[in-house]
Length: 389
Figure 1 (cartoon, rainbow, N blue to C red):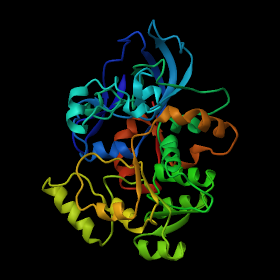
Figure 2: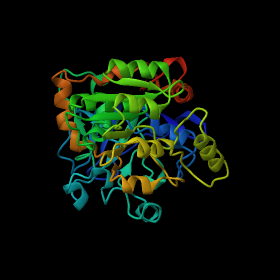
Figure 3: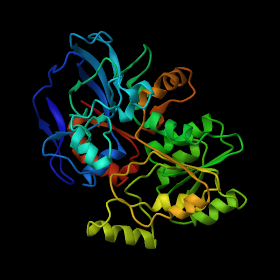
């Protein structure tokens, strides 16, 4: 089969690789009908996440048709149409029973390594390094889904791939980011980043009843999409984020802040941008935490910081005393996808949200390697790429 494979920093290739096969009685083999390039994939493309090996299959946002199931998988049958969440979970361990699917205690095949890096293992993730199990991803023609009797979302009749594909990652990620904020009707929610997750967080905050949603970015196409979704926009290249947030909140600051950027924060003409890039260059810091610093500074005391943006390692110069003395609550984590998908699927069916609005480019799988750079560099108005095997 064809698959997009990692061969080093900035080196993604469309290779011919062996077809997957059933390896465990709970498995399923899924023929991919649509997959996507996610912002988290760019962290692998740019070499910021360790644990990748030559030939690893990329991708964690995908869906398709069940072709084969293991003998103990009674939840699925050939012909079922499913979205596959990026988190692999067993459904039986203590964390899964609590709904904390992204920290499932059983699905990371490299638990010992994860224990050393993270203190305790996380769940296995598709296409996201050997720190999270080394599972082949879904930017391919077929994929083996382990624990598929639990790790799936069945698609009802009448919905297109484009409407449901993002149930596997960016829609529940934006939703969880907003839910973690405990939004009240009087709240201003400020969201850093107008990429795909930021766009979903904007619409989630609106649906959850925020009084005002503000989005900070600098890419015109992304800012325009954020405005269409109901956000007041701040272009950080042309405005002071701190001053503008003060104006929009009467000097109080936003009650809730969401970091939808993560470790590759880009800041124009900023000392901490120069500082972080310099430390990255000498491997003294792995991530660029400008957004975390700014959120801690501007957030109203007793507010909440929600962090769906991915961080992979070490950050420096975090004003934690500021966060502590202001009484800020910080909530983070990979998304517990299936905790939210029943509700979100109903909202899609009811017409409350159509996640396909974020798609700007749809191309064959073979053109995927070139689209990584287009997506990363925001060329050609690119906000979200869907690949069709």
